[in-house]
Length: 167
Image (cartoon, rainbow, N blue to C red; front, side):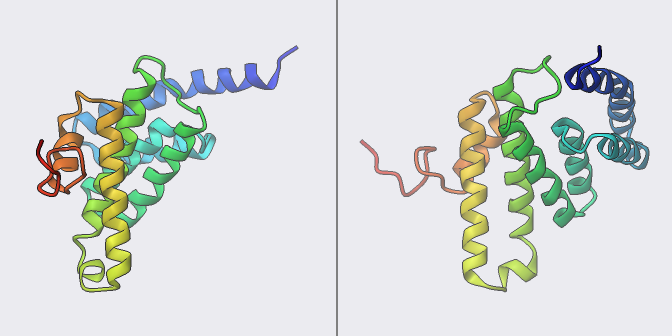
């Protein structure tokens, strides 16, 4: 008798070739094709975080930042609930990448004129969330120089920021 867990594993195995094709398309610069494949995977199972992260990256790279934020947030929620699909990459690395992706999306959003010249509290909240996410990404994956740089650049305490007291 096939259990729901067995069926889920079969479904994920069926989606894996599509995921790899999407990655290959993305790496080859065929972003439209990659985006379509990632969206197809997510229509089949919207809980898989890795295709959602890849889609968020494409959306961010093509300046669709608000939509990228939605996908980056959902990917992080799924990962935090233990929904990592791939096991080739350690959990802390995937979580770190997800934190850094959402942090980058927020960093880009706060550069938007509507945010910069809009509500100061909203700007500060988005900046603080971006700082926190970059710091968490750097903590999860200390080898992630990008997250560590932005944690420092955005002034996260403990990352060598100017406001940190020196011993």
